[in-house]
Length: 120
Figure 1 (tube, one colour):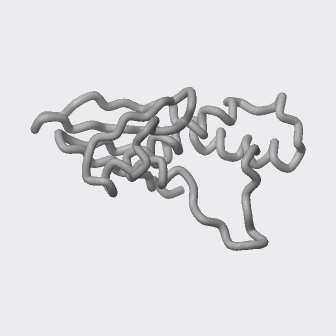
Figure 2 (cartoon, one colour):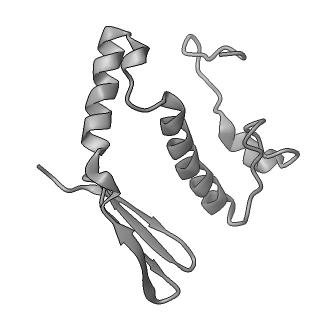
């Protein structure tokens, strides 16, 4: 299989995360932590699709909230990058408080009839 993944670039280093679960970091000009991560990602993805088909949520190997958190971290990084500054996120309210410029990135203007209800 392939060994694709994602590269997170920061101001002081990077994190390389591969689909097979391996990762490595480079921080302040030096190699940082690295490891295998157990390599369970392909099994978790397959399990998620199986549960989507069966609708038997008790068969999930990991809570859906874990995926939400992982995706949110990527979105938060992109929002800070697009704004060109640090942001402060309230994880309970899932907003940026009074920061309207950052909050504007939390949703989009939908085109009818493809709209989202206010409370999902």
